[in-house]
Length: 533
Image (tube, rainbow, N blue to C red; front, top):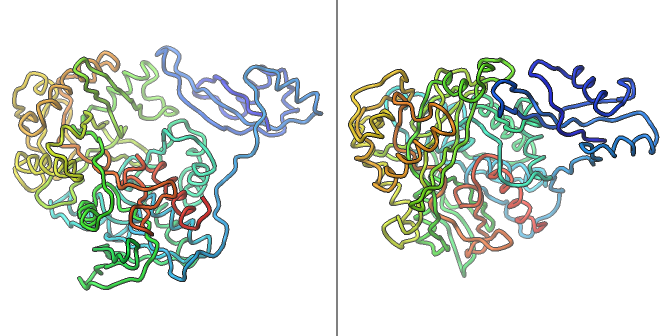
């Protein structure tokens, strides 16, 4: 297999057209190309008058070794091997007890799949509901403000990522683990294009199908799901895990014998963090970020990114990723950008407001949104307690609830007013998409001064990079506090906590940042639990 890189093509060129381009670039006769498939596709929009795709193409050719060597001499050609894909071999695990996983987000789900394939029949505990029932609870909350603390945007099958854009970009290297995650998602109903797009996404609508089908596969392999079963406490003897205390859907507390627990509870399981601290597990403060969701009309973003090519169906809704480092030593950046999406209520605790963003696969809604965040360091938390970052988050969310006026309405402000430190009275051209609704106010009344000051400077700087980003009618909706976990649950090189048999995993434990990296961490921890890492 030969990979041909840096193939530039117009937006309307199909596979046959790509075959012709490769033929011209390499001097190969079209009939000598045995097969051709897309390995990667990205958009080059640096020149707004010539927006085009850039491909990496994998091909097989007819010909002898000398013929192939001649092709490989071309500067953009390389020989590739088939990508190794992770698979945990069936085997025995020391001890007779079934492994237990707490949490069914990407980390817990893929850990469960790996353990089930190994024949170990894992038990997956999930405080929330299965995805279809969870969706009903979330919809009810968005319509009425009736929050269910264990079934919401944060908790339930699929984790927080289920109500997101379903982005699969990651800063970790592509390897056998990432290959397995992508292939498994496609097998479960994700679109094939996630295998080759430079910026793949699934969309919240497809994610619901994917997580259900992976659950069905785990169960078919002997795994067991226990929905509405919340991990309440650990039973620890001699520094080692011997069991769990679990509360079921009826409120009954029962004990479950366990000597291996993969803790994949997500970044919002604050009661679990408190329990771990009381149990003596090593927990550390960790930097994270806070800010607000910024919302524009998608047409403005399309025009800024694609110029006259805006609206081309081959391109879809444009995205962006912006970052600035300021003279005051602070940094600000955009995160979890959702093209053609909506701002969503993401609270998981009563009397606290938190926001997030979500897009369906089509990304065809009127507005674009992203988190506009400022880095927060442990010295900003206001104390040295290991959970101080979590308390910092709670204070902001409580203030946002009060400023919003109750009912989980979120405080909002127009960017023009935010820059001039004046209270907003209502929307302009951009209609806020957050439900249960917003209360226009001044976000300086809820966000810390250093966050407000940094955001104001960043907005102006970012507008130089993306024309219109700081337009007066753009809407800021607060607060965004759940960008990542406020703690790190310490683990060693074998992925084990200071409590023997406890394996912190994924984003909530502080070892991942997004769907892909969390899923990969789940595979690696499952490998460690089986003693194969």
